[in-house]
Length: 258
Image 1 (tube, rainbow, N blue to C red):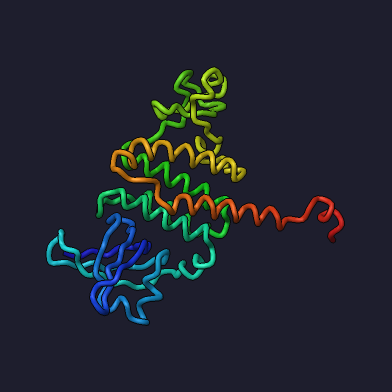
Image 2 (image 1 turned 90 degrees about the vertical axis):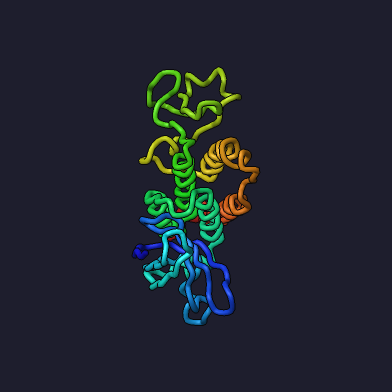
C-alpha cells in the first residue's frame, strides 16, 4: 500500500530511541498517523514541528497498518507560530477538533480551512473568524450542521440575528424578538461568507454559540469537555486584540502626526 499527499503536521510523539509517530491532516487522506524513522534526529526535528506543511509518502504492507512515512518540507510555518499564542492555541484547538473525526476519513474542506488559518495567523481577528468557521464546518462534518441561511420562522434571509437552541436554525431579529432571551445571539458574519467579524465581542459571541452545540451533540455524549486549547485560544485572542487596541494612537495623536 502506498500513497503520496500534502499534509499539515498536528503533532508528534516519540517511538523508541530514534523514531517518531507523526500525526498529519492530509488533503486527500484525512487525519493520518505514520512512523518516521529517525524522526527524533537533529536533522528531522525542526521539520516535524506542528504547523509545518510537508509532502508525505506513506507506505504499509496492509492498509490497516500504521505504516511508514517519508516527509519532505513544503513550508516551515512553525517558525512563525512559536511567538504567537493565538496561532499556537488555534492550531491545538483545530487538532483537538480533528481528533473527533475517524482517522483516515478524507475532509478536504477542513484541510483547506486549516491551511488558510495558518496563513493568516498574524491577524488575530481574522484568525478568530476563520477558526470559528472551522468549528461550523466541523459541526457539519460530524452530522450536526447549523442552518444559518434563512429564518426558521419566516423563510427570509435578511436581518438574521439569532439561532434556535432546539433546531440549530437561524431566526431573524423581528421574528425572534419575543423570545430573544431563549435564543442564541448570532453575529452577522456567521450567516454570510462576505461579512467580516468586526470585534472581539462578535467572535466571542460566535464561539459561545458553536460551543453550545458542540457541548450538546458531541462533548457531553462522549463524556468529554471543551478542549483546554479552546479557552486558551479565546484568552490569547482577547489579550492580542486588547494589546493592539492599546497600541493604537488616539484621534488627537493621529491628527498631529505628519
